[in-house]
Amino acid sequence: MFEIISNWVAAFLTLCIFSFLYKDNPFYKFAEYLFVGVTAGYTIPLTWEQAFIPYVYRPLFLQHNFILIIPAIIGIFYIFTFSRKLNWLSRYPIAFGMGTVGMGVPLSMHASVLVQMHGAMIPIENINTLLVFIGTVTILLYFYFSKAHTGTYGKVVKIGIWYMMIGFGASFGYTVMARISLLIGRIQFLVADVLHIIK
Amino acid sequence: MNIFERLQKLDRRWIFLVVAIAIILPLIFPFNSKTYTTEPTEKLYRLIDSYAPGPNEKPVEKDRAVLLCFTHDASTMPELFPMEIAILRHCFERKIKVFTITFIASAAPIMDYAINTVKEEFPEVKSGENYVNFGFKLGALQLPIILGMGEDIAEAVDIDAEGRKVSSLPIMKNIKNYNEMNLVMDFSGSSAGGAWITYARSKYGANVGVGVTAVMAADEYPYIQTGQITGMLAGLKGAAEYEKLVDVFAANPDPNKKEFSRELLKDPKWDNAITDKGIAYKFKQARIGMNAQSVAHIMIIVFILIGNIGYFITKYKQKQQQ
Image 1 (spheres, rainbow over the protein chains, first blue to last red):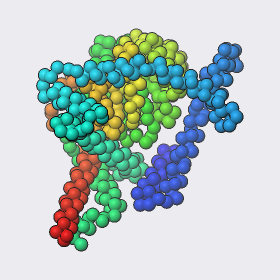
Image 2: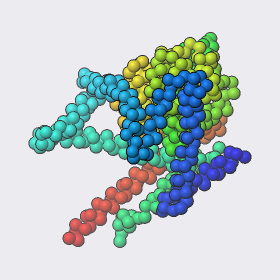
Image 3: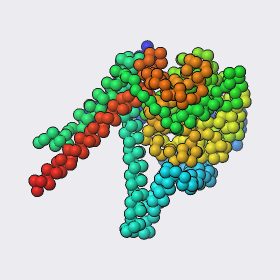
Image 4: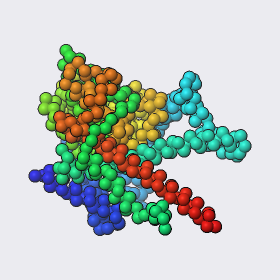
């Protein structure tokens, strides 16, 4: 029974969202605001249960691990972002956050730059590696702006533009596929789970 | 005003209607079509399948496991959920140890839903022995957990979604860190898999696979080329490919045909899955969806062609009038 009711509620909200395709209307707005509210409402108790209870309440009040008062207080500083007088305090927890980002810099350099560069510096053994070589060099030349894109240099750079256009085309094709997939998913839900036309 | 000029001024809502019909009809009247598998999907399948216990080996003793990380909410479910179902089915069918985790609150119910959907067909599969749901962990803990798993998974995760100590679970036998839980599969509609590449792969050498929405697929190919991503499922197409591989090998009733073989894959009988009543709808959802996808793509191509022809004819006529 619960599944039937929940499916019909979901079907109603799906149609509310689809109604925007005709024009903006109160049903669409209702579904949109409800989604935002439900997501926030769901996250708050989950964070309370998964963060505050195991990482603050239990160790501090039950296990008397008082050293945790320091990070807890620093965390509370976030709230001062709403105070004009004391909002400078909210920068301290942000500073700690930035520290952890810094920790990832060497590993990010390795994964996103060095290994990728190494991957581009392979011997030209076949047509694919030749295409990778031409594409990498001409695109890098395109982004070198200290020389005007004219003459022979401009022609070489144009090859880079073609490469990028093909890349954008592939991305756009995938994007169309993704958007259609979302519509397929919702229609599958309506015809299979709600109307039971397909099983 | 000729037909092309009229089409140029057509209300876009008519196009929405035609696309909707093009999608609804193939879903209501399913038909069989070929699903070709691509290398990134096959590589992923073969790696996961290599973690299956041997015929004389107890699944709980196996020293290999897969971690599935759900990094998405309901908005990308149509593309990612069929992938998750297909991989979980593969793992449950072949008794491969599987862990699930999420760092997004709204992904926690999706994770439960995916596990329960597949588990219905595998009553012998037990939580704590064949799989463990680590549950939702705070986003702020993502980095410490990813790094911590490189040393000791049970210590990094501590408790699972059911509140049990991970170290006390039978599934953890012979599983310590990324040396054993050797593949991390991240499902997302973004480049979230990058965190696993940066920390789990660069530092500990874990294999990383991604299941991404089609929008993100083009961004991931450079990482496949350099081998930093072992395999990828790209959008609904990737899910359909994986569904087929599971049907052909893992779910093959002949125990001698469970191993990947290109010859078996070529057999045309595997392309009749959509109308095969023996295969549950949930295990062929992506392939049915791909039929609708193909029809919609043809419609879009036709619209683009008509639109362009109309544009050039109108332009030509305007030029002549001048």
